[in-house]
Amino acid sequence: MTTDPRVALVTAAAGAGIGAAAARRLAQDGFDVVVTDAHERRCHEFADELAGEAGRQVSAYHLDVTDHAQVQRVIAEAAAAKGRLDVLVNNAGWSKIEPVAEMSVETWQRCLDVDLTGTFVCMRAALPHMIAAGSGSIVNISSIAAWEMSAEHGAAYSAAKAGVLALTRVAAAENGTHGIRVNAIAPGLIYNDFLRRIYPEEFFTSYLAEKAFLGRIGQPDDVAAMVSLLASDESSYVTGEVFTVSGGVSARG
Ligand SMILES: NC(=O)c1ccc[n+]([C@@H]2O[C@H](COP(=O)([O-])OP(=O)(O)OC[C@H]3O[C@@H](n4cnc5c(N)ncnc54)[C@H](O)[C@@H]3O)[C@@H](O)[C@H]2O)c1
Image (cartoon, rainbow, N blue to C red; front, side):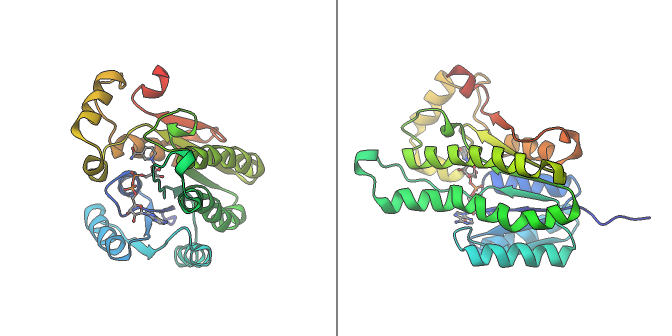
């Protein structure tokens, strides 16, 4: 008897960072991956690349998590096309650093819309499919900025990512008896080309010298490995938790 492969949908999966690494790792783990991203062209290109690498089907959907109707439609379509939805990785995030005294309401609102409300609407769209199946795993990408003060993060981002942790705990409590686990990952600084462009070289060297116990900067694959664990049955008694992936930065305080 053959069983259909399990299906994992990742938001904001077509960048150079955590989302793409998570999608790639889940494909390696044997999931049928649904790649979604607000950037339509890159979304399709990345899905094709991943399908070639993994030797399996990878679907692609244009999805901006701030478009609530699109979230509802895409998640319903993807679940119907595959006949199941086992894992949701809420990876979409946005930030702009403005001091509170000078922050525009637009910056505050955009950050909450992408990071917090985006996570909520994707969970709301995915949960009925998981409840009907009696199983599922949701992994929300928060940040150590949820509790750690740092000028690099900005208050809107910190508030939104703290909200993601609260949302994770309550959704875990509500859905545990449906066989659904909901967890969060709080990465520290994770390298990508975009960060390399916006921060000066000294930022990375001082981070390494003063903060990271392991003497290196985190990579998207470091977070993808935790996504893989939380998506798998190896973590079947784990829910409502937050897992820090920061190379010791968070432990230093
Ligand atoms: N990189 C870090 O240092 C770091 C640290 C802690 C937490 N995080 C969190 O990890 C997640 C991934 O960050 P990353 O830096 O690895 O980037 P990433 O490469 O995973 O994500 C960038 C992608 O997000 C897409 N995107 C942007 N807005 C979107 C929206 N509204 N809807 C759908 N897609 C959208 C972009 O098109 C791009 O492809 C974010 O939630 C971020 O807040 C990152």
